[in-house]
Image 1 (cartoon, rainbow, N blue to C red):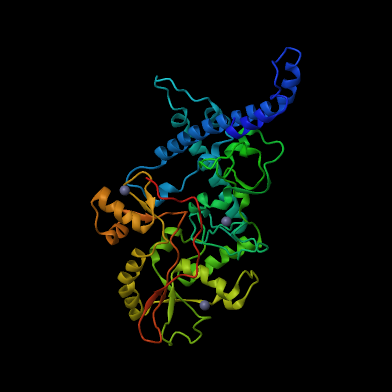
Image 2: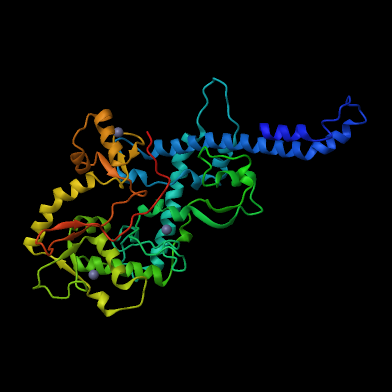
Length: 429
Ligand SMILES: [Zn+2]
Ligand SMILES: [Zn+2]
Ligand SMILES: [Zn+2]
């Protein structure tokens, strides 16, 4: 009980009677106190359970990391299931709910033993669901092609494209495996928790469950949203999903790749640039003003067509691949300036590949590289992958390069695309 509650108890008239407590008086006192004591016991119980779950949840998180991450880290190693995905798996729940053991004897960590099988099954199940989603929304898939690897295989999130919401909704270039960590697919909205949820569910699904901002018995309070295991059912099906895929197909085709077969790796490797013929209708003879990479091109379509998903002849021919040598030389010449701008940009969120979980903004990561790894050249650390952008808290946006300006100089523009926002990131080591 907190001091405030004890004081409340002390102020009750039945407790403050100025006479000795007799056997006859005791039941009266006890009756008056029963409710308060029951509530205090329930609070204490919830508090202990929450504390124990917090400790166990950390162990599960660590076991997943140990299994998925090796040094040096790569962005792919960070795209994994999360502890929340296993909280309702019976074996895992039993291990999460076992009481803490404070004895000094060494006990086996049950999570380390169960995580490999849990992850294997989860990955297989989720891959199946995501493949089914793509099969429903891709026009046709040639035999022998894995839809998950296709360059045009875009997943559309229901929440991000919820046109009724007040936040400007738009599709993003989300593919496999990045889709595994899209935040909306692990969030449930509504008036929560449900009446039938037990204490365990109420505690582990609270968004701030792992933070220290725990208030007394807060699992009783209503919530507008909470964390749930990954749910591919939160992806958008139907015309909006098909429209995102077709949007990507136009970009892929304009780059000269076969939309039906080209893989994401091939798309990334092709390194081509596109010009928007709706912004620059002058034709191939006109000097190129602005070029887009494939991510920025996908985003740019929004500028002309917003959320409309209707067929439009203009769309089909809006992209034109740029291969004039002088334009490509100009883009090359801009590379150092683009990297310099990135080095002074405070917004990106970087990961250190040489540490298990060091992640931070550019200012801190520069200090970290110098102090922990004796690396002074941050620019080179970006180029050789020693540090990389967090693949789902801050995925790399597209690039739009203004090749020709009124004053004759060229420069890099901020992409029209927006990164996923997340408040879960923090500087940590
Ligand atoms: Zn979303
Ligand atoms: Zn345009
Ligand atoms: Zn490091």
